[in-house]
Length: 365
Image (cartoon, rainbow, N blue to C red):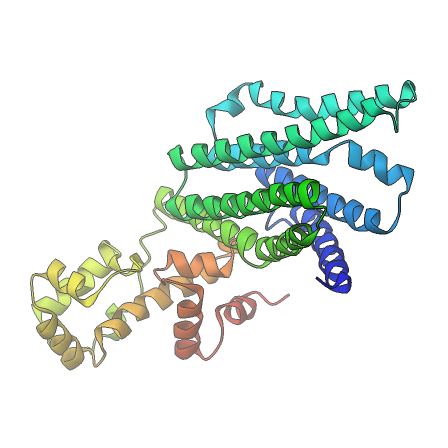
């Protein structure tokens, strides 16, 4: 593998890792106690990447000392703690989980002892380094699979959050496997092909965390908080302008009146999987007749009718100052849209502007 490509991947990984760790700590949108641990994890990964990259071209003593500290122990511990906070695991009620930081502390103490007794470069130093290398692999494997087990068993998180955390966990498992294979390859064949692959995979992982993972998880959290707030304050019963759209003086069928009632009182439009069949079944009629009566009396298709409610709900949330702290995508999902792309497409088609532009229009900076 071309060394230039490896250098680029490792430098990119370092910069992305540092950028993410700082963003998680300083941006209010991402700031949380769980993300503090994720931030530290990414900072350590970026630092480890830098040390590995710099160590390829130099044998500087300071680099060797940091490498001997085995930041791998600390990375495993902080990432595991991040998982515990995300799922609100009972271990957090005590201090037992802090014992997972003991291996790193022990590694630091050993390095101090080696330095004080001038044992660097000795047979004992080499034996300690290889022992810690193997133990760090075992420690990482144990914690990452323990974290996966806890995530699967957690009852305090949504399925969306569980899915994302399991994806993150799986990505880490892939990195650990690649890391172990790189060590085996190096020890047995004195080759670095898997080693190069490891750092390219790590670069990909950081990009994934940056553009998908953290933002997506935060949107899920925002939607959950928003939904809980709407339910607790009864603000969730959003009255749209659908009633005003009825033609005054025109008789409205009993079916359409019932349709308006269930949409506004039961908020069926908030179900992103709501289908024409679901709506027809709820009203006790057929899909064909429901489509026909909506087209005749409202001059719209079923999906247009439902999306009108969703757009009106989103507009009201975007127009309410207390919801400014929530991501636009979270508001779209809470209003019943299945995805960000669907929300933006329907909203823009209805108002000729994006949801973000609509929010800025209401509250110009």
